Amino acid sequence: MLKKETQLTRRNFLKQSAALGIGAAVGPYLRGNAFGASRDRITIYQNTGADSSNPYNQSSGSIYGNWQHVIEPLVELDYAKKAWVGVLAESWEFQGKRWVFKLKKGIKFHNGAPLTSKDVAFSVEKIYQDHGIGTELMGRVVRAARNRGIRRLYMSCLAENGRMQAIARKHDADLKFELGEVIGEIVPETADYISVMSEAAEDRVAFIIAVLELHHRLVRAA
Image (tube, rainbow, N blue to C red; front, side, top):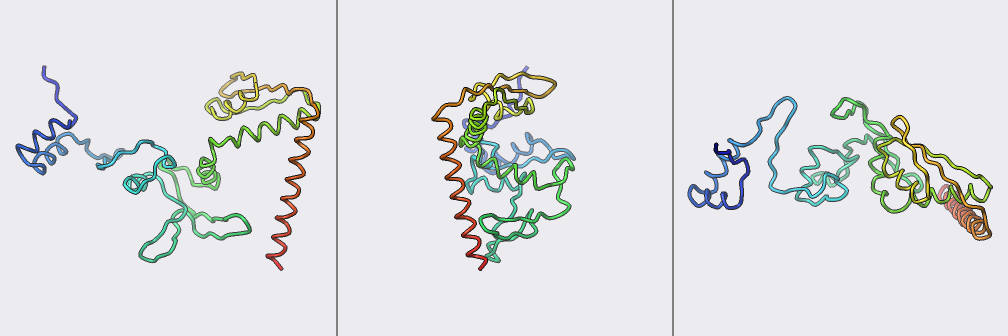
């Protein structure tokens, strides 16, 4: 039995184009092999492909239109108005060293769940992943416990939170899976001169930065 060919290969494309013309060859192919739209499915043909389903990994202009079908930004540039306009954000303003966004009401995901500030924070925080920040923070917690004589630390996360588990393993955590979550046990080493002085040095730096930021805010408010 002959198997119907469902992929347009380069060789077949050239054969059909030469015999019938590009327009005549591609048109019937798309009509015959495309999955029809339904209540639960929309088929979109695009002449560019995405190397990743993560928009942070690839966001070139050629596939930006693809992302617009599945994700929306807080704001976007309106070229006609030459100004930024809100998409998910109703308003936004710069306060000190941070941007504050007010979300529009009534926005829902495809499954009916409402959009919340936690969803926005999760999307933004993905940009800072894979830079060692979580590992560094966990290391400071372990060191603080070490310098205070705490002999055991416990952490818990969902079983699918592979990132947190990877961070815990870097600090020699003993992981156990229990009822859909992971319990990690970390035994800090005994405190020594280096661990105590390094924590003290970082505390001093953090204090100086906090004082300088406070001074900067007071000057701006004056």
